[in-house]
Length: 155
Image (cartoon, rainbow, N blue to C red; front, side, top):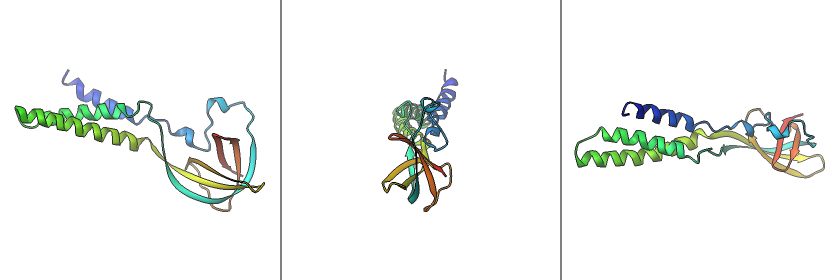
């Protein structure tokens, strides 16, 4: 069992980075958007700002926290003896859990654009999406969709 714990912990931390950030891109459609009519409007980019998009973790950071705690506890258990070993194990587990949670958070982040577009009708909108293509201020674009499922695409 002791030999299996490191493998399980490393596997858990590896899976912590499995949040799917692809849906945040302008070139990706969700399954329910396929074969449905999408509204299209046109406009010009008036402002761009680089942002970070934090993907929702499917496990609520549980995998990173538990995996980090297990690894930290195992490493702490290697230190000292007696009550010192128990303290090192506890400290390692707590530190590992905190580190694992932070690692999972950072892995679930993706670079994005906050794109402000002045539509041809004079109205301005802001769309945040994954930075999977180059945009520049003054560029003509298409706004595809509406409300919570709008993306910006080159025209």
